[in-house]
Length: 360
Image (tube, rainbow, N blue to C red; front, top):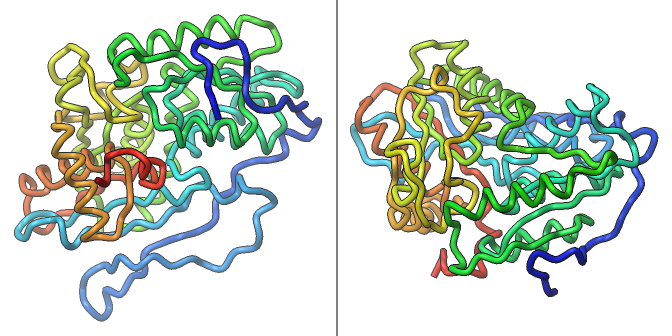
């Protein structure tokens, strides 16, 4: 499959939204942690699926992902580290949560109606998730992306029927200029009256979609969550989860994570890197200083090394942003010490990156 640079030639097929588009809502199945504290005094991390009826469509499979404890990569004498396996969502990413929220909130307000086209600028995970939701609900979807991102993601969006418009990255990496250029192109495409710009970086519907993740964590770790950390792209995930965790425990320490080579939050400037989904080159509009306590920059090489350890030692196959999350989580777990619980997320499945050099 070939992709055109800045092309008006689209991939995928057009569809008309059905009159019943608003009826297809996200209804997540149920996963949890088996509580065996009566035998061991500790919460076990064996995911079990509760008995549920069949969902009306694939949107019902979004959310309620398992949460497991990392037992091999985490050193002794520090806090316990749990990781939410968001790669088990339908497109293999936690972005499925926000895609449902963005589309369904727009439908409720009347901003998005049957027959309209959704437009977004994305590296591929958000695009795949929006493409999935649009496919189920019958909307056309046009996405602006780049060849700096994994080919698997570009092909996934096209497979769901998206029209994919590619902006070329001369270096093949994510630069401070790339995401703004993609956003500007998406704005141009969304000027038509029958188009709706999802605008993940500024859309307040995005954090709402992640609040469910926070509520799931509170149920899965009833002993209490002392700290949470997560890598920041648009910042919606960390903000949505933090809102829930801090409303339950104001003392929960929330840390935002970014690549050390693109330290916009920690040092005030962007940079070139290869960690897809984060380090967007500018301060995320959704980042709320009241909802996080610390910011931590992690070297990309450390994150990539951790990704390989997670696969070989924990059986968790994930992308580089997850590696950064776990490196940060271990550092924080050492600081807060034994007897505490720290949570992070596996942002997406590593199956999206096996054709590259991440696992070689």
